[in-house]
Structures are given as C-alpha cells and as structure tokens.
Image (cartoon, rainbow, N blue to C red; front, side, top):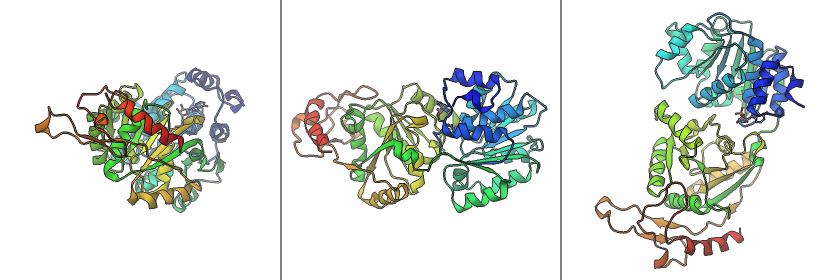
Length: 436
Ligand code: AMP
C-alpha cells in the first residue's frame, strides 16, 4: 500500500513524500479514506501511530483552498504541545495547498491569536479553554465549521474538558463531519461518541497494548531517596549493558518534583531541563528544542506536558515515579517506540509503588521484568559552606572502597565523565547485569 492509493491529491502526496513517508501507517490506511468519504469516524489509535496525518491529510484535502475568514475545520486537542505539533504537521503537509492554519492555546498572549483569527484561517487547532475565551470575546466565529476533530478525546476528558467541549459543540453548525480519536474507550468516551458521532465508521488499528508490546520495559527496585543517584548512574552506564545514555525523557509526578530533579541532575553534571504546566510557553518550547537538538540529555516532564511530545529517535523513557493511573504509564512509554520503532522504558520503583506496578501490569496484561539494581554511588550534594571540600560519596552496594568515592571535580555535561569512578564500577555492575 502506498499513499497514492488512498485517494489523496498530488499536492498532498508531494508533501508527504518530501516528509519522507514511504508507506501509510495502519491508522492512516484506514482513516484517510474514511475521512475523505465525508462520514463521521471513531478511531481507536494511540499517539505514535501516525494518527495526526490520519486526520490532517484528508481534512486539508476537503478544505481544498482558502475561503472566507471563519475556520471551516476545527481540531480540539488537550495540550499546548500537542496543539502546536498538529499545527506544525498541518503546515508541512499543506505546504503545496493554499490553506491557512491557525493555532490557539493558553499560557501565551491572546493578542496574536486574536489578530490571526481576524485575518482568517481555514483550519483552526485549539485547546478547549482558550478557544472558549476567544469565542466569549467574540474574537472567534465558529459558525462556518464543517469538520470537527476531537484528538486524544480520552485525555481531554481526563483533564476535565468535557464541559468546554460540550459548549463548543453547541456553537457549531449541526451539519458537519465529526472525527474522534481516542487511545482508550471508557464509558465516558462511549457516551460522548454516541452523542457526537452519526453513524460513524469505526477504525481500530490495534489493541491499546500495542505500544506496550513494542517497548522493552524494565523496572528497578530502589528506595525513594536513592532514585536520583540511580538515575545518574543509568545516564552514565546504562540500564542493561548498553553504555551511557545519550538522552532520556524522565517522568515525575509533580511539577515541583520535575524542577527539583532537573536541578539535581544538572548538579550531577547531566544537562537537564524541566517541562511542565507552570513553565512559560517560551521556556517549554526552549526546553523541547534544546532536547531535540541534543543540547540537553534529560528532559524532565510531568504527565500533562508529555502529551503530544513528538521527539524522533527517543530511545529511553524513565518513570522516575510511577503514575497513579495505569493508562498514563502506557501513554508515557508511548513517547518512545514511535511510528514502529522500538524503544525502552525504565521504571524506578520504590516500595510504596509496588501496588502501582501491579496495577500497570494488570492493565497491560503483561509483566514488567524487575532487573537486579546495579551498584550506584550515592553522592550527597555539598552544603554551600563546604563548597571546596570534596563531596562525600558512597556506594549502595558492597565493594565500596575509598577508591570509588565521588570526587568533587565537575563533570562534563551530558553523560560520562565521573573521574576515578568508572573503572571500579564497570566490574560489579557488569557482573550484575549478566545475572539479569
Ligand atoms: P503521531 O502518532 O501522529 O503523533 O505520529 C508519530 C510519528 O510518526 C511522527 O513523528 C510522525 O512524523 C511519524 N509518522 C507519521 N506517519 C508516518 C508514516 N507514514 N511513515 C513514517 N513516519 C510517520
């Protein structure tokens, strides 16, 4: 199967070819003809399956060329990052079409968005809250919308957007095409689908376990207070004999925890940045682009911020803390192994999280192997007054000797470079790995 068999026009085929896609992903092969047919569509697809092109390409085709000022297609998405990424995709796929894409989300000034709406757009991609704000200010006219997409509908409901979504839907013309994408089917999703969709074509590409199956998952048991030391060790030596990590996306449960961990990694010589909802949009964009450019090794993220992050060739995801909701684990590890690639997810599990790991395993109907925790150094950060004294280091395993105490020499950014400690460590940790 190739893209030209899906009924797409040459302008779109050209853009897709230039983007480097050879074959449609399964969701694209099913969703594109379904959307082109004009019917409502209910698609069960996780992020990473190529679902964005699955609705953006046929929508661009249906919109055809620029017309009027009010948007004719509206995509609602849960987070700023996902919204921005859908828009970026729409601009790339639509580069040979004369169409205007506009994106609106909260956390940034409304002014440019209001100006953009005034100038007119064909495709509007929005988070629900900001969109309603703009509608209330009469800056946005939704009366011309003929195509509505709810992307990551399950996540939008989890984030409490149901009332905003219902209000937005009431503002739309009754005569329209509706598309709903969701990774999971809760009762609430089914309820929303049955109210919103008329006689939909159902597109299901794979069970929701597919991502989980593609991602190699491992867990390490580690006391809560030692997690950061183990994480530093993993950056330096890897989790299972693969050598130092180039980059990893690290999940914490709280914004505060993300900030603190990013600082701790930085002071251990690992370039890190935090990305979460309290950061300004500019800081989030900068952290993401620094990460994509390889300038930082660890991107420390909270759940919400992770939605829609599209980072190519991301080999490692770390669950620094397990999420309370098993589905979130699946979403998190879906950040690696995108579009058919393989990847790995490493979870650091403290004793109080054992129950969460069991819930996750039950949900995925798959067990997560717990590997022997490798030896790692515990390097307490130095009190400011003793800045010139060497940091005290100890090893959490037998074989600790003065020779493996951590020195205070600054380490290279990124990975590697813990002078004097490597040779000692490679021995025991390798022996340990072989027993995994
Ligand atoms: P999505 O699930 O839409 O977030 O897409 C996940 C990733 O797959 C993105 O990096 C896309 O650029 C990429 N992708 C989408 N469609 C294809 C395709 N047909 N071939 C290769 N990569 C793709």
